[in-house]
Length: 498
Image (cartoon, rainbow, N blue to C red; front, side, top):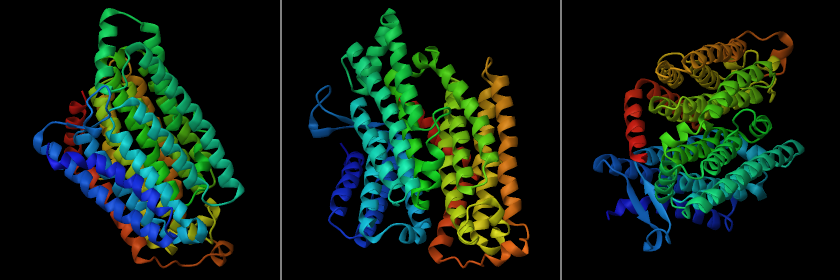
């Protein structure tokens, strides 16, 4: 086995060890350690991506050298390497972009706790990406939930505590359903390893045995992870969790946490149940309906908001709806579109939150739309960042959001029974996206009245903030202009999933 095959396990262990070591460090040193770990993990993830591209096949790493079914396995292919690399990049930029407000919002004696939670979040995301064992995935789902709650309530006030409690309640409901699904599946098959599970499920389906329990298992695991990823109508916790957190937390929660759960759904579809079995179970139709409703209702809720942070949060509900709508199409083209949108939404949503922070700073700390009038003039880079992020979400060419909507449209055309509904939903959602993003862009570049102008000031960006915005812009344009490369990587990665 080549040495690179150790890197997924090294990445997970390094992240978890970083959390332990950070507990004994002061905030400054915990922050430095976190950044070092992120860059090392990013480099190892790039090596995994390069190695699997070179060999053209996935590899399996057996923990402790104990073979299945006694040992635990890590499995890595092109999609895992790409996803892990992307998660690290987004986390680095989110932390850099929110650096200024981190020191303002988080008390000094709690700063090392923040980076403990960040390390745990990274480790749990990597484990969900790489693990080949369903129960191990559940364990790290719970670690991810605890870390996310810690990041929400790191600011000690009533709003964040309430948001964290609501998030915890909904997440525990989702985790419980997911665990029940795992228990039933283990009872049916006697396996927890994903590759063994897929073989056993295929045998049960071919023999026509345990049809109802198997359908219930698929439903429980799908709905459980849908709750945790804030699919409509399970999204009530999301606006407060994103809207009242620190900027770095909001960027990471919206861009990474929900995507980790969604990636786990994809793994269950392909590696546990089998994509054909999943598609024929009819559960995929429920995901399609919820996805369509999320696209529309999430956008309508965003239009009604007068708080820019909550508007961006409700926009995430709509974008998550896009992903599940792609799943619901039940085709390879729909899956590729959904996976591409995971990358597109992660890059764009983090950019929007970081840019919104700058607009808020240029408006006397207010998040209300009326006070944001002219904020793009007062804070040049924040205005540019929000404009590009908004245009991407609307689907303007050259940006990543355009490619996402194009891929969803192409996938819908080849879906006979769902084509019309999907295309209408895409058109309506795009119009709604344009309404709330374009009205915000127009407002931040409008000339403010005398009363508003008196309470605001022109902001000067520090170099880290500028570099963060520029990096997000380049990432967004890269996804939009080099979409064929990412399409190839995603297609190849999904083939390796089977």
